[in-house]
Image (cartoon, rainbow, N blue to C red; front, side, top):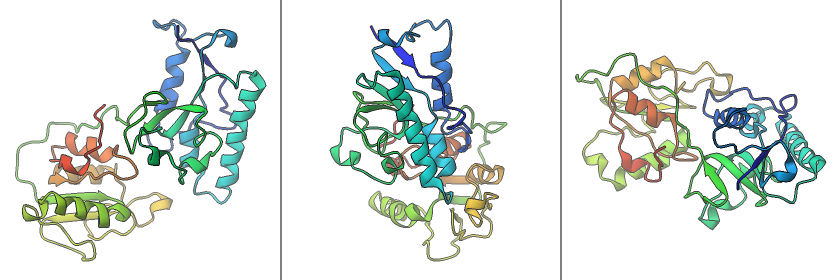
Length: 287
């Protein structure tokens, strides 16, 4: 019988701050799930000697995004990693299966499990095959034996009213990072023959009729909303009310895969009645 022992939270050193605006809420939701005193599945045990698997509820993903761009970010990540490992060692059950919160899932595709800038954030945790993952991103097919994929799905992205059937002034809208827009978007559109049906802006030009190409770092159109985030001083606020209003006025909203297929763009575009070419996200897993 599956019995889970949940370690005490490390909130004083690794607080849960919701820095990505609900995208990593799986970490706090899991804690609530296991802390339910009268859980119908009765998965949790308070006696570690009776546990078959041990869960570390530290908000490692949230902490990663909160500190990674700080000058001392690497040192803070090492500190958080040491806190988790020290806690596991103190309880004395490190030889038993453990599951931790992670950004990326383990994959069935071997090359997808190679060390990268994500796993190197916590190399002794996220790159260590000793640990199973509760995870929100699956760039490749997740390995169900080592990962529990919890894809991002916002609680509510629907506008106040159902988008009316009306003429939309923008034919094609893309809001995202130039790192994927210049290569992945145009390549995917060309491969699927979309360029014969739609007018797509060349990312090196500033404008094109009926097209808004909003780049996170370098807005190419003056009608694109700007972000107030200090990390995106000239960039786009993808979840801002202005950006969502633009989706309401677009016939097509492009939602290519970035680091992973999951993206707030997918849900926001659908909620605002914009057609999302599914061929751009062939590995997207519907929650």
